[in-house]
Image: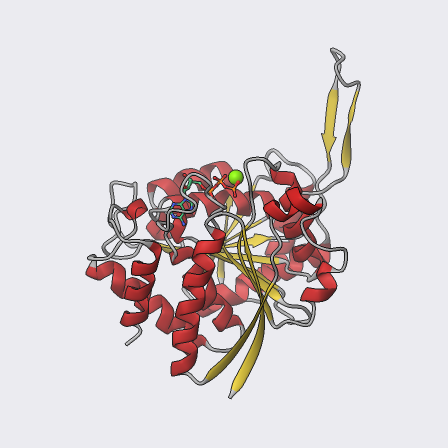
Length: 349
Ligand code: ATP
Ligand code: MG
C-alpha cells in the first residue's frame, strides 16, 4: 500500500467546513485505490493570530517540511488585515517550499449555468508564476502627506524564475491541446515584460507547442467574450492572479475553483487549496460549496502520483453536477455542504 503524509490546515470560516468535505471524498477514493493517507492537522488561522499574535509558530515551516503535501482550507477574518494572513502564512509557505507554479484550472461543468450568454465548453488552466514578479517587497514611500508624495514598487523577474514557469506551462500545453497563450504587456511595461517575452520565445523554440502572445488587457476581454478558445495560459504573478480569478468567474461560482501551489521538482511539499477565502458571510451555516476543496484534493492526488484516483474525483463532481439534483445555494440549489459531499462520494461508483 502506498501511503502519503498530508499536513492539513483547515484555517478559518468555511475552510473548516470544506476541509472535512474534501477529506471524506479523499478517504472514499483512497479506500478504493488502496492508498494510505495520514493526516496531521495544524490549527493555524487568523483566529489563532488574534489569540496568539502569529499565524503560525516560529518553527511552522520546519513542521510542514517533512510532509508529502499540504492541504489548506482558507485563512481570513474580517478583524485581521489580508496582508497578515498573506505574509504570515501563505507567502512564506509558497516561497520556502519553492512552490513557483500556481495552477488554476477553470471548467464550466455541464449543468452549471455560468454568467456568460454562452454554453460553449470552457476548460482552461491558468499557470501563474507564484514567487516573484510584481508581488515583491522592494520599494517604498516618500514624502508621505506632501503634495509630491510618491510610491515606488519594484517588480523582480529572474531568468531562472521565468524559464521554469514557462517550461512548466509548455510541458502542460504539450500534454493538452498543444497551444499556449502567454500574457504580456510589453507595449507599456518596457523592461520586465519584453524580458518575459524573450524568455518565452527562447523556450518555445525547442517546443512542439504553438505559443501566442496576448497583452493582458486584450486577453482579459477575450477570456470574457470567448473563453472556449483558450486552453493553457501562462502569466506573471500579477497577470496570472487576475486571469485566474476572471477564469473562475466565467465558470460559475468562486466556490468551485481549485488551486495547486506546486514545487514540481518535489524537493518540498506542494500546497493545495480552494481559491475562495473564509467567506465569513456564510461561515457556520454548512452551506459552503465544497467543490473547490474537493477538486483541489484531486489535484493533490494527481501530484502524489495517482492520476486515476484524481480523475475519478473530478468525474464524480461532474456527474453530480450534470445530474443536477443536489447543489449548494451558490449554484441555485438547497443542499448543504455535507449533502453535496455525500452525493460526490456516492458518484465515485
Ligand atoms: P477572505 O477574507 O478569507 O478572502 P472574503 O469574504 O474576502 O474572505 P471569499 O471567501 O472568497 O472572500 O468570498 C467571496 C464571496 O464568495 C462571498 O460572498 C462568499 O460567501 C462567496 N463564497 C466564497 N466561497 C464560497 C463557497 N465555497 N461556497 C459558496 N459561496 C462562496
Ligand atoms: Mg478577502
